[in-house]
Length: 207
Image 1 (tube, rainbow, N blue to C red):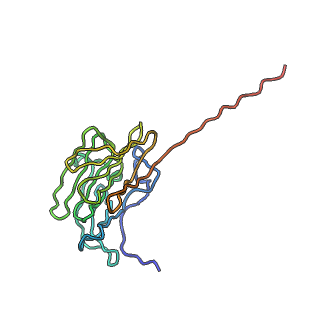
Image 2: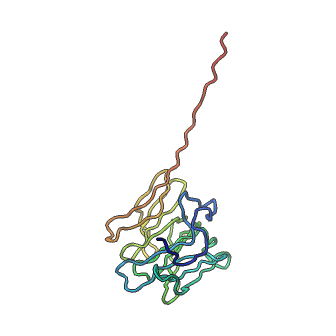
Image 3: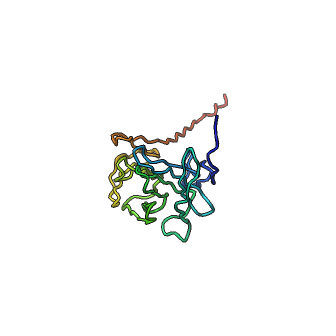
């Protein structure tokens, strides 16, 4: 029998994403992540939208919402992030840090320490328009998907900002990289668009 755990704010569908950042899969807020099973007593994290703010709260799947942990404001007041509905994030395997980014003209990733509330901005040279990200299984780097007109790519980005190209998909978008728990494999989605056209010749009138 289904049982309600907590009420959340926002809408998780792609309708919340501005058209220039549109992807044909469900993505938005509310959204949640949980730490790896080995993380000791760390809570799951819920992300919600309230106006131009992204709110992170701790919750327990059995007991519901715990404490609000952090709120981030988007728009002109924030240097790199302009649209909360176009942002995306992931929780580190140990449940202690959040990585956050959005599609913009320069590659930036924000690392938020949930305990100290300290923020670290990671700048990635020569790359832009990130569309999704995931922590590596050891928490030492990030797998990031980006979009470009020539095709999408998947990068491994160190916390220093150094980027390594793992995959370039010509003519396709790639999204949502997810590493296996042992770090040996990486799953991701591919988005393809096929357009066909036909020419119909008009029969000539008989003489």
